[in-house]
View 1 (cartoon, rainbow, N blue to C red):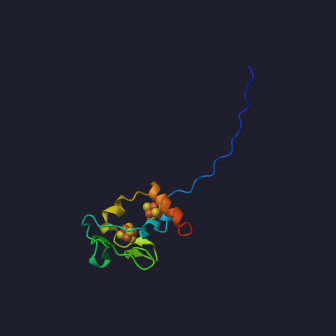
View 2: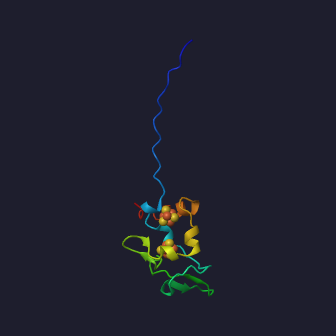
View 3: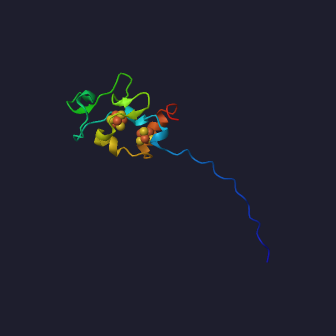
Length: 105
Ligand code: SF4
Ligand code: SF4
């Protein structure tokens, strides 16, 4: 019987892992509505044009609760429900990361 030689295929280059720890909080420029009370401090709460409560954003668009040195949430334990449910690696996350491609490490 003739044996078939095995061909070594080149390895696929590994995709960079999507993780918040290598991301400059790209999703923290989105509008975040406060739909439940999670204890967000008043100083970080704003009112939108329709009277709804949202996270306060600075003039450059970033959430006021974001630590700009570490790009970490300063109210992580009290962050809004929407922030809790924003899923790392989900299509929305990938879209945000692509939108700020130079911002993540
Ligand atoms: S955009 Fe995705 S990876 Fe970046 S901080 Fe938000 S959830 Fe994490
Ligand atoms: S509350 Fe925290 S997690 Fe939510 S947008 Fe602001 S900084 Fe990001």
